[in-house]
Structures are given as structure tokens and as C-alpha cells.
Length: 61
Image (spheres, rainbow, N blue to C red):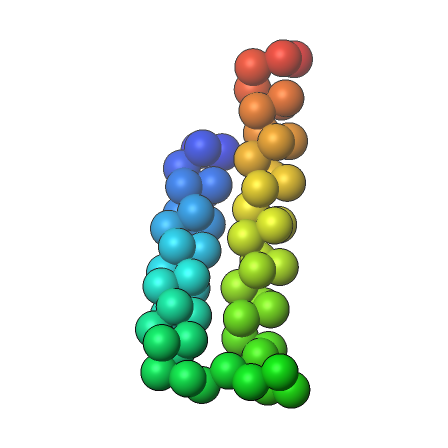
């Protein structure tokens, strides 16, 4: 269940990054207006940290 839940979050993060890439190509982001880009980056960092915790929990303990 833990890995499935994490997989869902990875899928969601990949979707968010795809949307950000599409908006970046369209030119929606500026130096002052880039909240969507920053939110996707923070979310992806969150998923990375959760992955590390899951790895330790499942394989080391």
C-alpha cells in the first residue's frame, strides 16, 4: 500500500511537471510570475523525501 500510494504521487508529480513544461513553452512564466513552476518543484522535492523515507522503512528496518 505504501509503494502504491507513493506511485500515485509520482504520477501526479510527473503530470504537474508536464503541465509546467507546456506552460514554459507557451511563455506563461516570467521572473515575477512563476508560482506554478515553483510549486511543482517543491512538490517533486516532497516526493523525493518521501521516497527516501519509504526506502529506509521498507528495506532497512
